[in-house]
Length: 73
Image (cartoon, rainbow, N blue to C red):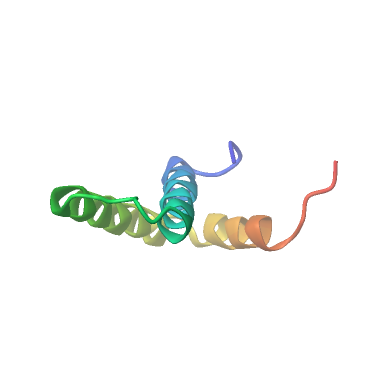
């Protein structure tokens, strides 16, 4: 992820964090979030998406390729 602009890195990190919340919410029946926490997460998500949309088009395309295709080491 270091090869991308900061705005794309922020989006990627936030996306992973939201996926983790989703996993817990799906499989832990005791998982709860306060209304204030949910509002904060929504605000953070809107900010992360805004940053992604503001990023350079070439960087956004490269990021899309990065997440779509498996990396070989």
